[in-house]
Length: 461
Image 1 (cartoon, one colour):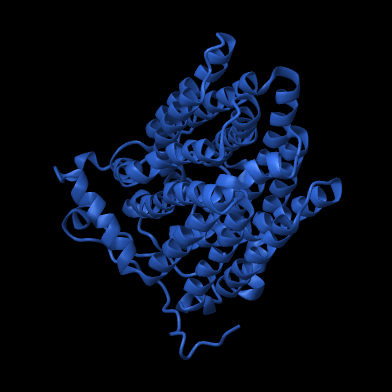
Image 2: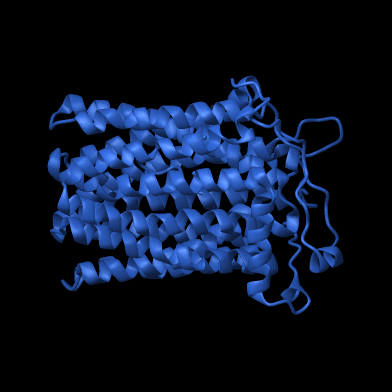
């Protein structure tokens, strides 16, 4: 549905998303948050490794504690977002995250900053982030018509990638000017901007007060059954989870490997992240045309096939400027593939999901992907200590073949057109029975012609 206050749409004309006030406010707030998160993604590893002299195991624990809360809270956050105001939940998450991050420069100013504090901040920020993200992603289908979701996700992915580039470069500049701890004030400001923009969104929300007295756990179970009951949602969620596990194993040691083993400086590290974000922008903006030309299924399959190959420069690299360019180029290609596939799969899941199940559907994916990350972080810490960082990165690159196999064995590999929207269930019907996803049937792989993240699949390698 579209907001009743949106003046940009009229019969017979193609609505402009940039003139859609509520979408523009939503996009501005989320882009500010992404910019700030990119500052933290660049600054926190520098702070932990170079300032606090963190070991491989301590880096793994820092990553683990930051990723554990989403794994524990995602399902509850999704059920709450389907039941109550999504905007209020987003604002609460932003303000809690801002307060937690603000404690880092305060601790540094008092000369009391420690790895323990960083770990606590990571855990609190992770919990607040999952509350925000569960509501933010599921709010979009209530702001624009479903026919505009692919264009909306493409614009979001492109702008987010530009924001990530700006954030990485800004993080490098702030670190050089202010030091890594005070550089985090940029992320604090971004959360405040995000909360302000979200508060100004005026689109109506159809909350379901306590769903006629149903328990929260019952609604969580409904969401799990809903995703499991639709082969498209089930397959894409499994692809997301397996990709997330492999990337989390790589991400845990990636910054440590570049900063310590390859002797990359903080400025060069930020520039490499920025180059990769440009790839994400290109992939997100190209996603609608690529999906239209080749089909969503083949396009996602190709993206998943290319992704493991982009790890080769990282695995062969040695210190030097030339290898820094090679790693940046590989990251550009990897994130282009991730953004194109991520934009497409997100649109498919939003299109085939009924309105009252949007947040819970997204929460199931977040739960599985988030649950995979802390396990992968601990595994990366153990393997990195026992067999070394580079062999662990090789193992992570090999694991990127798993989601490729999952999608290849699914009927979705031959999906040539975007599926249709599900029938809208009435509130009374939703309380009594679980809505059934609908859409065109995808051919079985046996007879198909043979001819791929909320940010969860758009991170580093």
